[in-house]
Length: 85
Image 1 (cartoon, one colour):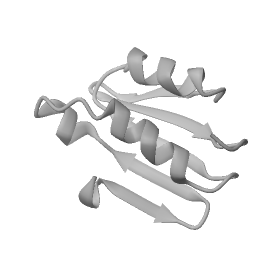
Image 2: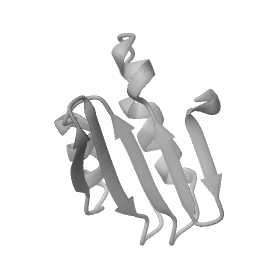
Image 3: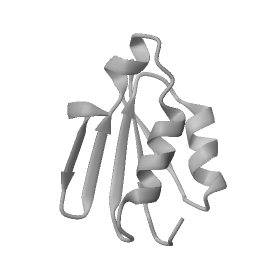
Image 4: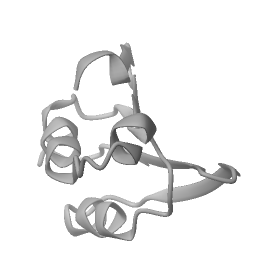
Protein backbone atom coordinates (compact mmCIF):
# COMPACT_ATOMS: atom_id res chain seq x y z
CA UNK A 1 0.00 0.00 0.00
CA UNK A 2 3.02 2.25 -0.28
CA UNK A 3 3.18 5.52 1.60
CA UNK A 4 -0.58 5.54 2.21
CA UNK A 5 0.14 3.80 5.53
CA UNK A 6 1.65 5.36 8.62
CA UNK A 7 2.21 3.21 11.68
CA UNK A 8 3.29 4.80 14.94
CA UNK A 9 3.42 2.28 17.74
CA UNK A 10 -0.17 1.33 18.42
CA UNK A 11 -1.79 3.53 15.75
CA UNK A 12 -2.04 2.66 12.05
CA UNK A 13 -3.34 5.28 9.61
CA UNK A 14 -4.32 4.23 6.11
CA UNK A 15 -5.19 7.06 3.72
CA UNK A 16 -6.81 5.32 0.78
CA UNK A 17 -8.64 8.32 -0.68
CA UNK A 18 -6.35 8.89 -3.65
CA UNK A 19 -6.23 5.22 -4.63
CA UNK A 20 -9.99 4.81 -4.42
CA UNK A 21 -10.57 7.98 -6.43
CA UNK A 22 -8.28 6.51 -9.13
CA UNK A 23 -10.68 3.57 -9.38
CA UNK A 24 -8.90 1.04 -7.18
CA UNK A 25 -10.86 -1.19 -4.79
CA UNK A 26 -8.42 -2.01 -1.94
CA UNK A 27 -10.95 -3.56 0.46
CA UNK A 28 -9.24 -6.98 0.57
CA UNK A 29 -5.83 -5.35 0.92
CA UNK A 30 -7.08 -3.26 3.86
CA UNK A 31 -8.69 -6.28 5.55
CA UNK A 32 -5.47 -8.30 5.07
CA UNK A 33 -3.46 -5.44 6.61
CA UNK A 34 -5.81 -5.20 9.61
CA UNK A 35 -5.29 -8.93 10.22
CA UNK A 36 -1.50 -8.38 10.50
CA UNK A 37 -1.40 -5.53 13.03
CA UNK A 38 -0.85 -6.32 16.73
CA UNK A 39 -3.78 -6.61 19.10
CA UNK A 40 -4.50 -3.22 20.69
CA UNK A 41 -3.70 -1.27 17.52
CA UNK A 42 -5.97 1.69 16.77
CA UNK A 43 -6.71 1.74 13.04
CA UNK A 44 -7.78 4.83 11.10
CA UNK A 45 -8.84 4.36 7.50
CA UNK A 46 -9.47 7.46 5.38
CA UNK A 47 -11.69 6.97 2.34
CA UNK A 48 -13.56 9.33 -0.04
CA UNK A 49 -17.06 7.92 0.59
CA UNK A 50 -19.02 6.06 3.27
CA UNK A 51 -17.57 2.68 2.25
CA UNK A 52 -20.27 0.28 3.42
CA UNK A 53 -18.58 -2.83 1.90
CA UNK A 54 -15.37 -2.08 3.84
CA UNK A 55 -17.32 -1.36 7.03
CA UNK A 56 -19.23 -4.64 6.62
CA UNK A 57 -15.96 -6.50 6.04
CA UNK A 58 -14.43 -5.14 9.23
CA UNK A 59 -17.62 -5.83 11.19
CA UNK A 60 -17.67 -9.40 9.87
CA UNK A 61 -14.31 -9.83 11.64
CA UNK A 62 -16.00 -8.84 14.91
CA UNK A 63 -14.67 -5.27 14.90
CA UNK A 64 -16.72 -2.22 15.82
CA UNK A 65 -16.30 0.64 13.37
CA UNK A 66 -16.88 4.33 14.07
CA UNK A 67 -17.46 6.46 10.96
CA UNK A 68 -16.93 10.22 10.87
CA UNK A 69 -17.42 12.49 7.88
CA UNK A 70 -14.47 14.86 8.25
CA UNK A 71 -15.56 16.96 5.26
CA UNK A 72 -17.34 16.27 1.96
CA UNK A 73 -15.39 13.51 0.22
CA UNK A 74 -13.41 12.53 3.36
CA UNK A 75 -14.60 9.82 5.71
CA UNK A 76 -12.61 8.37 8.60
CA UNK A 77 -13.26 4.83 9.79
CA UNK A 78 -11.86 4.07 13.23
CA UNK A 79 -11.55 0.71 14.91
CA UNK A 80 -9.37 -1.10 17.44
CA UNK A 81 -8.08 -4.62 16.94
CA UNK A 82 -9.08 -6.35 20.16
CA UNK A 83 -8.75 -10.03 19.18
CA UNK A 84 -6.58 -12.18 16.92
CA UNK A 85 -8.04 -12.45 13.42
